[in-house]
Length: 83
Image 1 (cartoon, helix red, strand yellow):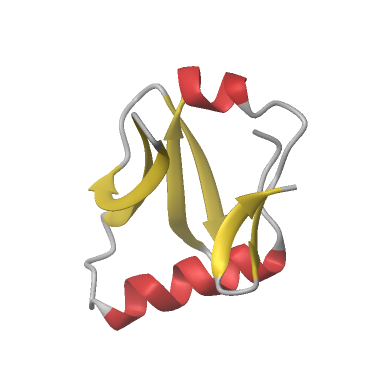
Image 2 (spheres, one colour; image 1 turned 90 degrees about the vertical axis):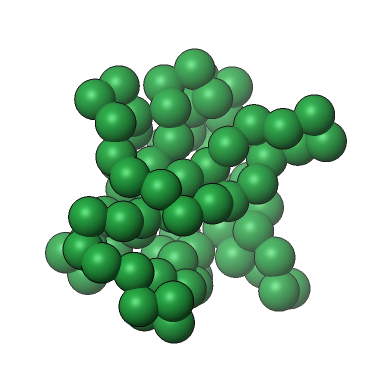
């Protein structure tokens, strides 16, 4: 994965603020049978890390990141998508 757009960063930051997540918590992208989902989690050693406004807002494991090389996470029309 090649990062995220500003709109995705803003939305992830707002989600973490809304649930009053402690600084060590972030959003983790997880692979499921029907696609990807986002869950509250923590950074792991092999994760790719994405920050917004000085806070880690998104982590994704290196295997999943390889599936999305050349793509960015975006927030469009009320949902996250890859562009």
